[in-house]
Image (cartoon, rainbow over all chains, first blue to last red; front, top):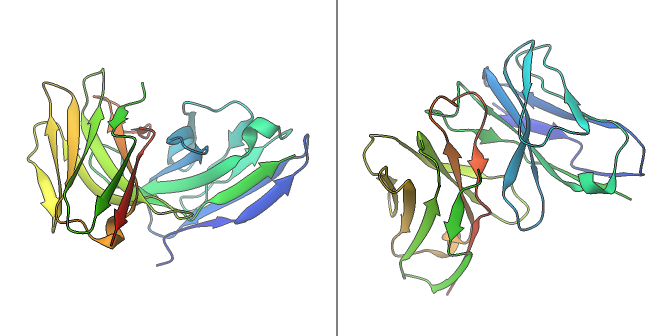
Length: 114
Length: 112
C-alpha cells in the first residue's frame, strides 16, 4: 500500500491564480481531512469528509473548496490564491472518526503564494 | 479551542527522560499524540480515550487525566531518534467526525 499520496510536493503560485492539490489514499478509509500547517504552529483543519459525496468545513475553510467523488480521492481547490495561503498542506485519512482511529498523513504540499 | 502544550521546547542528553503536557479548557473525549520530524508528515504515536488506560509502547507512554483535561507524554531514556516536534490533538465529546484540534507543538532535541 502506498498509503496517502499528495501531489505536487512543491508549488509557487502568483496572487490570484488557482490550483488543485491532489490527495489519494489506497487504504479504503472513509474519513479524509485537509490540514494546513504554518511555521511554528500546529495543524489547522480546513475541510473534512466522512465518505464519498459528503464534505464539511473545518476551522479555516475560507478560500478553499473540496469535493469527494470517490472513496480514494479528496482534492483541495484554491481559488484566487493569496499570500496568507502560503503554508504546508497535509492530507490525512482514517478508517472512521478521530475518536478511536489514528490518522495517516500524506507527505505534504509546500505552497508559496507571491 | 486549541489545546496548550508545555514546554514549547526542550533539549535533552541521550538517555534522559522528558515529559510533555497537553491541556484543554474543555472536556475531552480523546487525546492523540503525533511526532513530526523536520520536513516530514506527522506520524501517529498513540490515542488515549476518556475512561481508558494509560497507554504506551517501548519507552514512550502517555496518560490522560480526565478531571484536569490534561494528557502527558512520557519519553523514557530518550534516544536520538526521538528528536522532533510532538503534537497533541484533542477531540471533544461527540466530535468524532470532524478531525482533531492540534496544539502548537513541543520541540524536542536530543543531543548525544
